[in-house]
Each structure stands twice: as C-alpha cells, then as structure tokens.
Length: 386
Image (tube, rainbow, N blue to C red; front, side, top):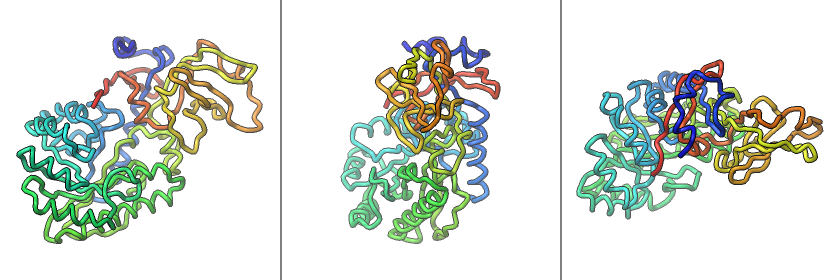
C-alpha cells in the first residue's frame, strides 16, 4: 500500500519538507487563481463551460471547476471519474457528463447503469458505434467527434464519412444528435500566444463547418477546447449561426505544467503542482545527483524545457534522465559553472515542476494541498482506474 495514502492525514499542519517522497503537492491558492481566471473569461463571453475531470480526478477539484454549481456539466475520460462525481449530483450541483472516448462495446453496460444517476452523453465518430447503441435498447444523446488536426480521434470535416455519420445519426432510433465536439490536444505544441489564438480560431471554424451540415432549425452545441486554447478564449471573435451554442471544455487549466508554460500563454508561476523528492546520492565526478522520482512519477513527456522535470529553485537544473524509480539531476545551461555538491545534499528535499501534470498526477494515490507558506492544509484522494 502507498505510504502517503495510508498516512496522508497525519501530515496536515506540517511543512512540505516533512512529507514522504515522492509526493504530489498542490498549491490551493494558485489552483483558485487559475480557475477563477477561466470562469471570468467564459462569463464575459457569455459561453457555456464544461470542465474535463481527467487531471486531478478528485471531488474537491471538480467542485471548484464547476464553480460550486455555476457550471453543471463535465467531461470524463473514465468511468471512475463519473462515479466519483456522483455526490455532486446528489447535492444538486451537477447534471450531466460526456463520456470522453468514442463509445465502445464493453463500456456500454456500465454507462447504461450510470444513466440511472446522471445524464450521460456519448461521443461517436463511426457508424459502427451506432450499431452498438442499438443493441443497448436505449436512446442516447450524442456528440459527433471531429478531428481538427490532432489525428487522435474523430473525423475531419472534409471526410465523406462525416456526412455519412450525420445522416446515420439522423436516421437512428438509438442516437439523438446533440452537438459537435473537438479537442485540440495538438495545441500543446504551440510556442507563442498568437499560434494558440490561431489554433482557437481554427477549432471554431472547424466545428462551424461541421455544424453547417446540420439543419439550421436544429439547436446544436459545439464543444471546443484544450487548456492552451482555453487560456486565450478571451481572444475569440468568431460568429456562429443562431441555432448553435458554443461550449468550452478544458481539464489541465487548474494545475498547468511545463507543457502549458511552453505555449507562451501562461507564466511558470501559474503552475499549481510540484513533485517533492529526496536527494538520494550526489556524484561530483559527473556533476549529477540522484533523486527518487523516475519515469513512473515524471513520465517521458517533453516541452520546450529540457529533460523530464525542472528543479523549482535552481533554474539551470533539470531531471535529465529517468529510469523506473530513478531520476538524475543535471545542469542543462551551457557555460554555467555550478557544482552539484554546492546545491544538492544527500537527505535534503528537492521540488520539481513536471512536464505534464495529468500524467504525473496519475502516479499518486494522495495529494497534499498546501497554503502560501507550504503548510499542508488538506489532502485529496484521486479516483483511480478505468
């Protein structure tokens, strides 16, 4: 059993330097600032908002992202995310969830059972999926998933299969067309604010093009988003037909990470999570140090920042190599003469920014929530599994 999970409550009131390692630390103040910023943006624009629960996967962060009932819809990548959010349904704060993967056969019985407790909407990008729905014996509200360039899931707007799918949905007794959905996850590769804005405009143009294939008398939701484009949603200037309601979805925005900082739309201080690790050994002969946070904690994700994680208070030092449980700290700034023995001591704690907070968070069974003084003020337990 994970030690931090078994004993998480005993660390409330302690400083982060007393935590077991590796640990995930959440700055609640920064979380609140990030969420409030996005809520303010969508409020000024007068558009709908649907948070994605994929990053921290806890009841506490879900409540904050929903604005305690101000917004009442979510996207969930996994069944445990839906199940975990059900207490908010009972509290009258949450009404519906999109299952965020194009629907597949083995998940339909589980989703059917959950419909008794929360409204479930589905994503489809294939006529074959409609046949699966027909076997469920129920009628489902569906969003057509389109591909706006990520080449992950969905149909391109110029694909003949898109019109075929729309026609099949119209004819189906088991599917009711509710909207068009896209996710611009490739926006993580943007490196300037202007390129992110261009991506946002492209998203909207693509969902508008898909919506144009549907009768203008039908009310339709077009759901766009990814955290980089959500950060610049205030730059939106596209006009949509009167029958179309625009909805924004995003999931990573409360925490952010080095990938988000790399897009140029937020600063490094907008990151709300850090990993706490121990310095296990120091190697002056190669100017490196060993920490107990490896690939399982930090993953092999990349950004404009070198390595697999960045030391928070030593700007020239990063996690330059990882194996399963081992991380190697090294100086990545050329022409900088900094000696590892002067900066890192065996037995001391080191704090790291991570490349991709969604992946890093998945490694932990308990999160330590801290105040501005790095005192633990609470613990959050994430929903696990699929």
